[in-house]
Image (cartoon, rainbow over all chains, first blue to last red):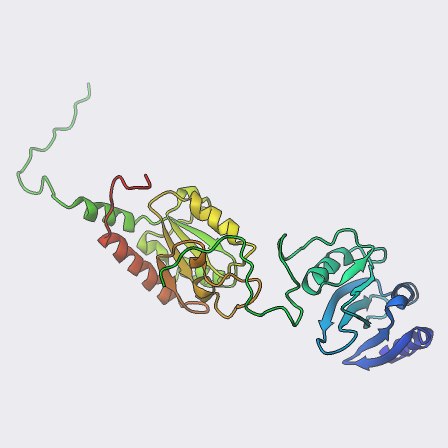
Length: 160
Length: 167
């Protein structure tokens, strides 16, 4: 049954996907950043992907373009998940926001922004959500020093 | 007409006890620890276990958690403290009245534990003085009880000035 839905999605979106494969029971679509809104619109309207599960990024330090931005959606009509991936370069790490489609994207884009520095065009509120104001850098990028600390309270003088 | 009961005549034995002020105050203080649980993470489960029936910290007079730092004298920092939380912990500590003691409960509060990253504070002693460290991930209740008893010993042996430089 999943297969039928997946085949249908692949057929309808074949014009805008670079690659499509079923991985671990999830349909994974690779797209160009410019086609994001079109793909999401089609998934939501035509296939009932009305649940926004997650947005995150993957850092490939040696690759160009360096970042993958990854979204997960769930369809409460067909009970299947889909993963949408796109590549953005370090020089312009930006994609369109999905807030007009899913309100819950507002928070998750904030997290992705502070952790990876991905800019979501159109999301007006990209303040830190888990980190604090004044935090410098993007801690989940591979080039962030593992032991680097940015304390908010000055450390005490210790005798040791 | 009511009559006052007759006051027993002094027998001459055990009417007075002499003691050292520090011993007396220390004895009183060590059995009336009012903990403030600053509980942030999974060690909380162990904290609940050690304060409830089976292990029962009530036996040591450290039973009644006060949920305001102003009424408590033992700050128990239970669990990971992040950099974002550090100002809160610092403020709680500063609100407590003297005399006060601090226990770092579990390895995260002690040294950050296995969290060595952008988020976690590597040990609460970076920002507030700590009197007792209880290691373990999480510590066994026996270790916590041992720790409380060690702190009590310390309080009993300590000097307890009525007036000190902070007060």
